Length: 124
Image (cartoon, rainbow, N blue to C red; front, top):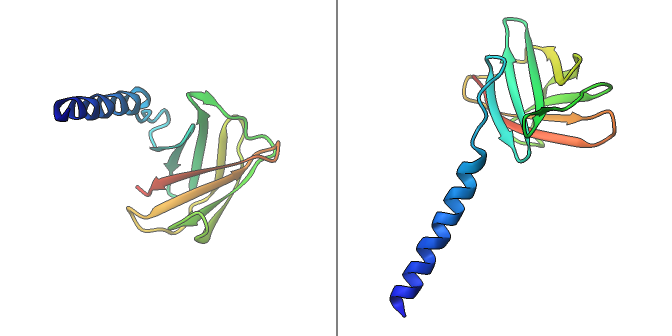
């Protein structure tokens, strides 16, 4: 009986490991930092004066026409440190916010259809 329980536990762990590795973390397409927030992925690209975020759903671009967004520090309800606006295609852009390297950043975007997507990134 004990062997059967151990075998069941091992099979269950293997099943979850396979499911987790099936998605993986996507590679940056624009040279930025990528995080996957559930089904939606966010890529953050920082220049000396701006920050741009690219949004995708399982590799498909999410249109950001008429979208607005904000960058929050530390949590989904953290301090707002930046505003974002649509930059065409699947991107949102704004003036570079002040944050320390390795800070936890949250991006909240309200899409043109009224739905909200949130992503978490570790600052470069």
